[in-house]
Image (cartoon, rainbow, N blue to C red; front, side, top):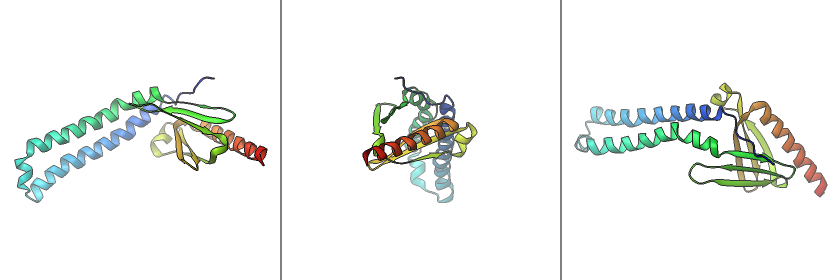
Length: 163
């Protein structure tokens, strides 16, 4: 059996979402520093200007890595397969995590589509079990709906077999 990859537009979706986050944090960090110095005349910020700028710079470097590099790595790591009796997927950036969900353990399934994913016609499948919620992100919307219906029918079939 061959694993499926996420849609290639996943990288763009993640990049846009993370870029928005990076811009917001950058404005808060740099704007907040400026605001506290100018409006409240916090002298200690001026005394530690270099230290504060280095810390903000380090945070921004990590945010930029998260924005531009991690989506590429994450996309290459993500794979999933749905069989007759299980949902199996692997995800991660630094460490790979493999999750196997038996069909019998699935309690409910939802397909969601946020504003950024809507631009690329992508959806996320959430699979809820008693142990928690698991998500397969950025699948073509039509395929996500198809997978959702397939899993619902498999769950119903397995439940009927065990009654």
